[in-house]
Length: 583
Image 1 (cartoon, one colour):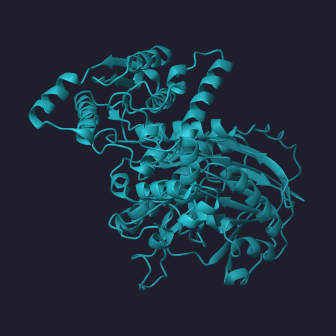
Image 2 (image 1 turned 30 degrees about the vertical axis):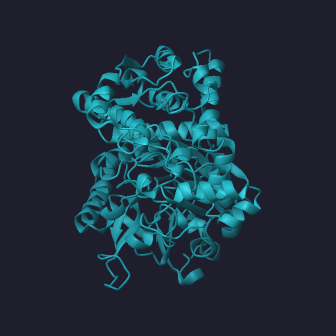
Image 3 (image 1 turned 180 degrees about the vertical axis):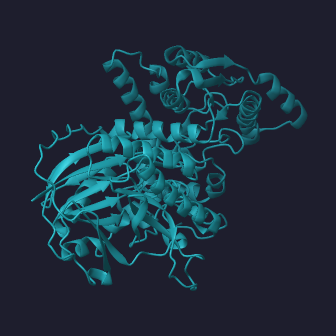
């Protein structure tokens, strides 16, 4: 057996920031070298950020990525880090691909390179291209057709990129056929609820299929609506976990592995799925035996509610910071949605950078402002009250509105005020809508839907309550003041746009509604299948009509953190003009 010290750099990157991302790679490579690593790895497309979307189709950006890669290799050499092989994800193009109908122009590639002694000694592209959910990689990339392998200190390391592990065939069985001692996969796999368990079982399965130790390096951070949760994993050939990195943290996991020595003759030829082995030897001989580092401490996994809450915090923090903002603005109604958004915002950017405005109308309850004031006291956020009654009365005197138009006017006045303050003071507005409301169209365009980001747009109402209770409980356990007033959690939800209004006047009970929506929105189940699951036919008909007729509203809602397998946005793409109905 041969020894190899592997450094897995689980880090964040920003789309388009080639210089900043390269700086991070240098910094973490230096850290890896200081830990005595023999091979360092970074996530998928770490040099360009991920996903680059249509930037992949811009030849100038592709060339900038290629130039940045070679500059990075030279810099690592110049700074005395060239002897450490480094695996780095970047955006490349195929020099061999010819124009073909159905292929992206310029043949971009989701690629990675092994940098050593100032050059890219091996480059390769993702073989399996995902084309589901938020992924459109057939639109952007051409696939790689090789099994890349690099020999480091007498160990043959097979290399893969993300989807190469998620799909059957390809590089995993090819690694076994080629006799790899280690399979290393670099990834930018977005977070979803409960995906950590799926990911672990996947890596275990692929390790057994590859017949070798398998390292799954993941990205952390956030990009627009996506969150990356880290949770990098290394398992042995039998699927036993060797190490698991913390979730939602930038870190470098350094571990010593005992791996099979590579044969004297380097593998060659064509293996599974017609992949041609591309092998590079960097150091042929195993290292003299050395004392391994103590194994990294086991990391406790987050509970379900803490995991989702942490994802929401990280998603908002990434959006604010990466877009150059410093502060956020929230309309505080005293209700559970705005209270949870405020708590998330305080945890994401600091209470001193969170601004809240209560905007009571003639229909606001006494506890509305009181609960908002209590939230501000508990969290320390900046708070003010600006009544909208005078503005409302002026509009009503001019327009003589009634019914729904009168109700929505209040929401739009609040939206106008928030955007005015945003323009004046430089905060970005956060929209407090949840997934239950967005599904049913229970929001006012240009009113409570205004904003730059919707932190809870992918969270159903029942989960809103659960997360609020968890956040308060977690604070109490740490000896801190729970941020969310108990009254905001226990009182019946209400938009307070008419006397005595509660959400159940317009919507079913949320416990029932959310279970039904999960089947229709997340599960794509039809009317009959939902009724067969035990729901009242009349209720199903009503809810499905609400969902189907609200697509135009959802299309205009701001982006927000994705935490489910099917969030509103790129996951779920339905036509606005659509006469198909389940009923």
